[in-house]
Image (cartoon, rainbow, N blue to C red; front, side, top):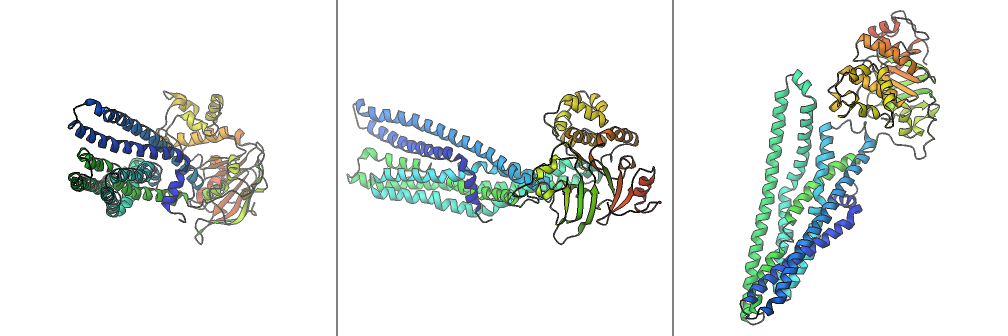
Length: 586
């Protein structure tokens, strides 16, 4: 990174700098009031032992009361300001992080485990909760409060202020550097290990069915418990370093009081300082250590904050796979089905890697339907991802309505497409909420109509809560076929002029599939449609059927459907066999 992590973190705090500045000033006033309160209280007790007229103590008594109330008020206001700033910073961090990684999906995020991403979004961001209040502000407050306390003692005798400054430096500078040295590597390791434990925990929950089928539940649980135990031991070592720093700080504070007292006694016996101030000096010195005691923890938290921020910056600094043009072309007019043209399209996931698509030429006329078949791994779904602008292709072009999609904003391209992909992403919410993702303003009547086409309405109404039924994470309370039909209904609700069906009927039985395809035909009519898969019931709605094999595309049927032809071709996997004649590329 060109900019140091610490400087970048400070930049993220800039929008709340006024609240943080108020917290620093209020924190200084609270400590100054406490030091003055302790000093005044010591003076009051000493003075009370030498006077006979209570009126002589009136000013000191009033000062003690005012300082006690002021200390509490300043501390309350300081906590209010810093906590308000912290909550705002956390909200800003989450919004900033999500806005930064959203353009990276799915291409750049595909290499990260979901549990590790979850750890970065939640735990790493939460780690930065302490950055402003416990890392940035304590040194600022400590400098101001230490200067105040040293000047207070120096007013009686300059060497007393110097001695206090030396001891404050031991606790505020030397001790934090020591604890940082002891915990720096452990803090970075703790943050990384926490991400690994989070990833394993997510795998344990989401992959439990697969682990059980493979008889690896116990093995995975043991690994998770072992990693968790290592994380606990690491946390214990870091806590021990914090405890050591706190113990040494208290010890140094006590030693400072003894030294100040030892220097003050000759001043009193020599008549340079009134005896009534003898108790004031060491007690004020001890009170001053309130300002520097948080600094060892502050420097230790700096390590964990930088480690957590480094993980966030490593992710957000990744360039997006696809970027919008500086001056995008106007969006295509809505409602009109555009044509799709692929010209010399070539793509590989890694530079110099295996070519997934090679010199693909295909034209899908506006309002027509083309089916793409081919063996698994041949690049059919990759073709859909390129059309959705999830990846950048190196050669060739894709035209939508005659316009190169690289000249359009990615959102404008995706707005034109309604896609039912192989992976159905559902959320732990109600059926209606999951359907409304396609159109937040959709009416209940439109939702019901879409579900009737998707052959799902009767299934939903049979549920106790109907469309208000919660379906669980990834829709685990629904069957595979029900999830698939929910995705189809969502694409219907979007009502986009281009429809892409990628293995849309893969989990359906033959009877349900036949009814679904029959209900979809009127919806498909008049839309530019790509059908990807092998199931004959859906493939046979296409005007043209092409096969993708070895990264190349060839037509295996053009014209009216001949029953049995597509089924036998896809089943045999030979493309031109079973009496089919290849035509030129579309």
